[in-house]
Length: 160
Image (cartoon, rainbow, N blue to C red; front, side, top):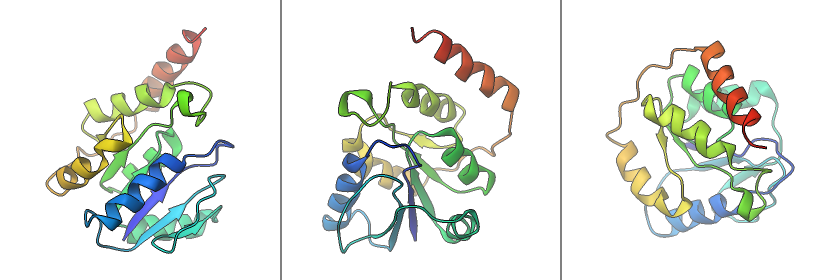
């Protein structure tokens, strides 16, 4: 089972769900897909979609998942990494009104450089990432909260 995490931002991230549905249609995804969509409204019979789910249900779904596809939210990424899951991360982008800025690009780059996950910057690269993740062995996540918080704070401070 593949679990898709879109977080709880008030902005939609339909581009990712459209690409996942395209990957199902084209045979890149052959297993059940469950989506925690937050405020993203998307209708399809090819995925099981929930707006919000309890923490307990989310934990159970993460435990069951073979793969997590997530937006670039730190919370979604870290919860999956702490459970030793393979993760493909895709940033929400400001130009599509998916977030207030493009900080998720930088977050994903940091985790990708440490080889904790497979980060892509464009939803169009998802089919290639799905092939690559099969042989990808992530580094074990070591929570260095203070360093990560400092990186994120510095980035936010320099947005102005």
